[in-house]
Amino acid sequence: MKILHTADWHVGKTLARRQRLDEAEAALKEVVAIAQDEKVDAVLVCGDIYEHLTPSPEAEALVYATLLAFERHQIPVVIIPGNHDAPKRWSAVTPLLKRFSVFVVPEVLRPERGGVVEVKSRDGSVTAQIAALPWVTEQRMISATELMGLAEAPNQIYADELARLIKALCGTLDSRKCTVFAGHLFVSGSKLGGGERSLTVGQIYGVTPQAMPQVQYVALGHVHRPQRVQGSAVPARYAGSLLQLDFGEKEQKKSVAVIELAPGKPAVVREVSISAGRQLLDVSGSMEELAAHRTMIGSAFLRVTLKCDGPQPGLADEVRDRLPNAVEVRLEYPRQEDNASPSLRGMVPREQFARYYTHRHGSPASEAMLSLFDELVAKAGEA
Image (cartoon, rainbow, N blue to C red; front, side):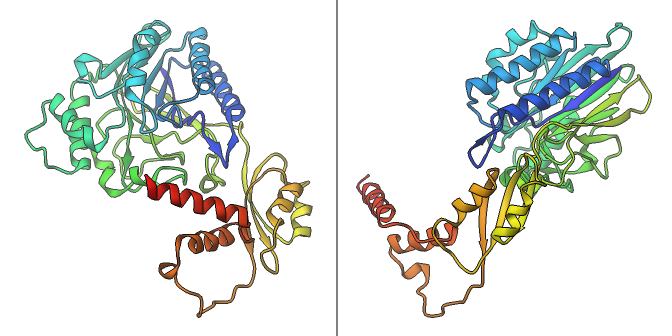
């Protein structure tokens, strides 16, 4: 049977307040088209479906429309929430989505109580068992291990407990069927994409590659860079995000994975590229040089470094006039260290804000801006 592996949709994410729902819609339509063209038997969505725990109605409408599109093509979907998703929110719609062949595992469940989802091939001749592990927070780890009957060592670190959860979840899988582990987690040594939340990809969360279970394929979400997990004894892969979500991902080619499985045989894994979404680019130069870039950058979002003699009011606005897709403008100019300048510790809040504003925007804050800051500081002191 064939399975399509995708993750980290992050529907609803913006870039410097630029809405990207149209890009997400195009990318998701491309995923549905790939699933249809490849005649896959199931789709795995390994977490971070949304960007926010409380997604906008527009983001929810797009996700549900995508799930209904899979159902129209008679392709079942298995979903696990990631650290950006609200488990209780997904739990609320789980019974409803099941009617449309969308199987959600919203929290850690014992294998016999929904932690393992079975999906049949189109012709019914082959069954895949998918052991599903959504994102587990540090706070929920102890209750999760208790649920799996593993609470005799509650003081082990997160990664050790997670490895035990994975082993317990996959321990009942039948080798006579196709076996898959789907998880939203961080494997130590994986190369980050650039847009991940740093607090959730540190060593405390890093399970070792050797902890990957003995299944035919390990489908992972959480890391935005598409990649095979190095050091794993079985094929294990991060599908990666569908869009370049952050400038740390600007050079990455996005994709989904298509996996061919047969009981007792090695998995065959292929990357299928995703072309939708705007490219993110860094451009640098003088004002005249930046203007020359306009014909070469197309619709890409830009992080601009303006080389100039020094900060002047309106420089950033002038850059945006010439390059409307500039989402961030930095100034690069000769700076002289002023040893006589007082340290931040010696400044009152107004002076600290004034220095930050000038450094950030390349021009001094107006008196109206400083007065507004003073009012906010005063109100904060009264609270």
